[in-house]
Amino acid sequence: MDKDSYLKGFEDCLDLILIELRKAKNLEDAKLRIEVIYTELKENKYEAIRKMLNLG
Image (cartoon, rainbow, N blue to C red; front, top):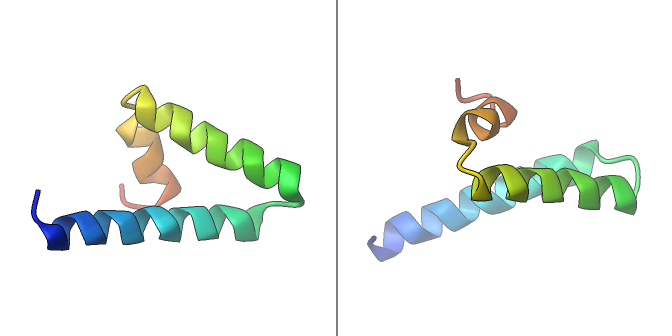
């Protein structure tokens, strides 16, 4: 993976986290939302993440 691709991926990750923080009602809700995304990513549930990002 080249540097530009890595930076783009990191930027996309931060965008998703900021979106979830804005949606959250409080800190605990934000933590739960981010943990769900992290778990789905670790379990290779890319389709669910694509839907969260409105990519498909």
